[in-house]
Length: 299
Image (cartoon, rainbow, N blue to C red; front, top):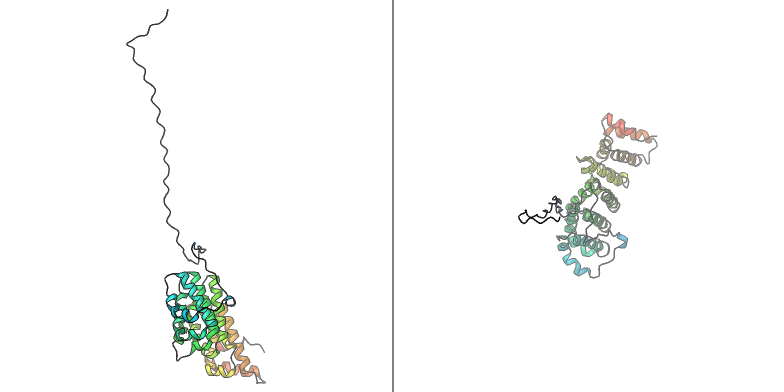
C-alpha cells in the first residue's frame, strides 16, 4: 500500500553553505627607496643613471675649444650635479696637461675647489679630485709653493686633505692619495716642501703623522748637505729622534731613513765617519735619544 504525502508536513530547508575560514593575507609593506650610500663599511651601490670611468693621465685628450671652456670651468666645478663635477675635474686635468697657461690665472681657486671636493663622501668625486691633484702637481710643481701668490695658501689645504685621504681605510682612495703624495715630492724642490711637511709629523692623528713622515723622508733623500743645513741639521735630527719612538712602523722606518740620509751627507768627505756622526748626534740630542739614533747606522 502506497504512502500518501502529508500536506501539513514541515517543508525541508536546503542546507546552508558552510562558511569558509578567513585566510588573512599579509600586507606587503612598501620598501623605502634604496639610497646610494658611500660608506667605507659597505660596498658602494652603483648608480642607475651614471657610471664614472677613472681615466689615466695618459688617456686624456686635449680640449677642443679650451678658451671657451675655461670661462665656465669654476661654475661647472660648483655644480650640484656630482657627475658634472667629475667631468669638470677631468677638464681640470686636461687643462693642466695640455693648456696649463690658461689655468694659471685661476690656479689658486682651482686648488681650493679640488681640496674641497676631496672632503666629499662620494668616492667617485674624492678619487677624481685626487687624480686632478696629481696632474696639477706634474704641471705646476714649485709654482704651488710661491709665497707671493694665492696658490701657496690653497696648497696648504690640499696637502692636509691628501694626508687625511692617504690615512683612511678605503683602499682605492688611500692608494690614489699615496700616489699623489709621491708625485708631489717628485715635482717640487725638497726644501720648501720639507718646511710644509714639518708641521704634520707632529699631527695628533698618528696615521697622518706616518704619511707625512714618509713624504718628509722622500724629500730628505733628495737633499744635499747644504740644503739640510739651510733647513737646520739640529731640527732635522730631532724630527728623526721623535719619529723613532712613534707607534706606527712607517713613521719609525721614516726616522731611520732620515738618519741614514743625514749620516751619508755629513760624513761624505770624512775619514772618521762614525766619530763625526757620534759627535754630531751627542751635540744635538739628549743622551737617551742620541743612543737610539746612533744604533741606526752601523759602521
